[in-house]
Length: 140
Image 1 (cartoon, helix red, strand yellow):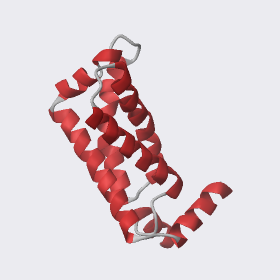
Image 2 (tube, one colour):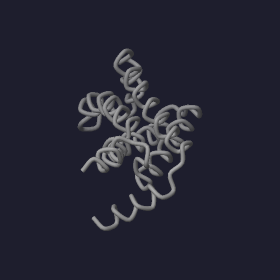
Image 3 (cartoon, helix red, strand yellow):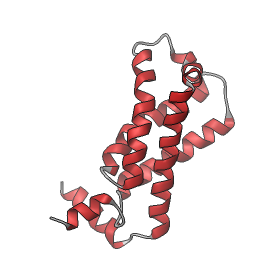
Image 4 (cartoon, one colour):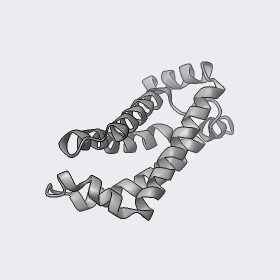
């Protein structure tokens, strides 16, 4: 707990509008990716074809879209950002691995890698000063 408090204090002291805009853009991107997976479920099935015979393949298909939808909304608003990012990390690691197991798509690999790095950054940075978390903390 003291580590999280010290990270929050550091993030609030070093908050900048471009980082907040980057967090919002990341959340909107994940939300739109979730909508894309829901509207075109065949894309998700095709992406997971290399690992479809593994246990839990159907669970993964039903986890990806809602996790992106809810996580994207929470990240964009800055509410429970670290928890939302923690839910995204296994999905992004899987997205990177699928590029090496299945057919290699360089564009998908680059997008997944950049989003993964952004999520790791916001896992440590948190939601920042211009977020719902900060607003609710100041209302106490």
